[in-house]
Length: 374
Image (cartoon, rainbow, N blue to C red; front, side, top):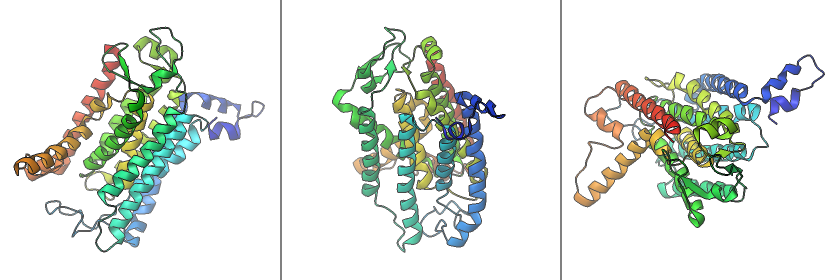
């Protein structure tokens, strides 16, 4: 049972109403509020101290020439998001739930990896941080651990439109959105697939983190969509009605996702244009990886391509830019990722961010509508 309930519930005491915290909906709301308040306080207290410690964006190497005013802004703010999400989850989620344990592992592990990269960038004279190869290997190692963890955990999954019985072999299958009862078994390819999802989502969010509020704001919309899906997945009646896989215990992930939403809102207060602090790899890597893991655990991996369409487009813009330059010597965009292309076309930074947010909201709503289309 979650920490609040475990420590304080006493049916004979005057405050026995705390039994209400057994309900996921109530704990989800409090987790969001806790994450928001904690992150806001953490960042508010941290900004002057981070400036004093010199953890700042280096004007000579870390920002682009056309991004005036960003030099000297505090960075590595993602550690406060990770801290707020972790504390909120520990307080309100069921810590005996294996899904919560996996989520916290990915969040904290990728947060530490990103923090190390950010710290090396601001502390070493050359400011290179971790090499790309080393960073990817670190992400793959974390993803491999959690993939094996999932495989060795009997995933309590059932298809309510069929027999309604739990079938463990479904845990290593890939389900197709928009289609009823359509899936394929991945078998030995399941572990590499899980690693690819976590690696891809983690780096896609990292690539998007280039404008004030862009990445953290988009994460909020994606998290809201997946928060709804985790609740439906863990709810017997809703999952039966909407004909999605019913995964016992996955509803607890709603509390974790709500903590992410709250913490990101608290951080956005300071990260909105003009940003007072940047998230850095310490926030982008764990947020992206956590969303990827949630998608894997509730069997909605392919839907992540829709919900996180902004992240997908940003990542594809980089891939296409590099491929085009190597194959033809020409660039498709003025600069990649895509948001920098629009900047070089003269579009104001805040307008790019808001327009990307609008697209992100539309994609999240479309993804949620797919549940009914089945």
